[in-house]
Image (tube, rainbow, N blue to C red; front, side, top):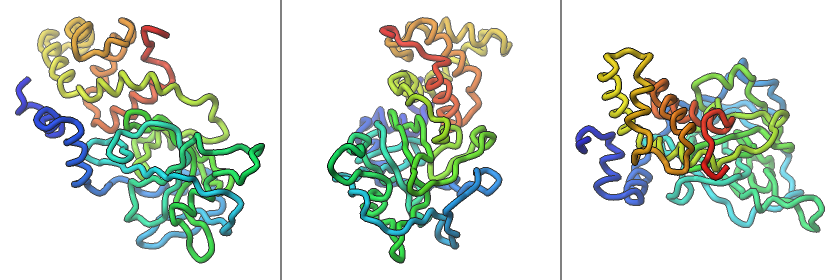
Length: 301
């Protein structure tokens, strides 16, 4: 494939490298366009909610309290609309965090974080770090109240949101209804399909499985080119495209070596089936399948 056929971001990566590309895109970040606050029919019952105005989302209010410590550090995650990925200090976001958002819509695509490792249990002889302390550190305080747009926990891996929740006992934000989590929408850069209500959390997602999927996502343009070649060989017959694409791609440089042969086959079939989706929709669909262990098994598993 010649560079002229590549996505503009991939062209940049080849010309100036990944780190320089990330820095350039971060400096010229577009505002997020598709982040309306969930409507009442998309939310479970919304308790403790404060009405918004023209510039702010509805929020969650709590009387200001010093019952929790502020985190020693507060990473800030930014959503890059061009890359459809989250970054912390210019690096792809990875890890488990508490998060809060502010109400001001000028802050769209920004999450204020506390590292999960900083959250202390009640057995420690110190005030715990929690969403209240994080809200104070983030400056989400109005009229002696800590007011945030949303609060919960979030798991990032390779810049993608593996899961976000409403797990904040202090701010008690409303969750999304089950049917809402099937929608191709996002709130504050957080895809509805990655939402998990705190009442049904279960085990944390195995984010190690996401890395090979993320690696292939970065090569999606090239993989789709091979799929187009397979489509021609199959005379545009959908029944045979996946099989021919698997033969062309398996064992090649576009497939991570960490995958079993079966996983590589399932991932390629997924790329074929969902090739018409936008990158954002494709990433969310793939992440759900990966986290639910429907596609990927690693060789050393």
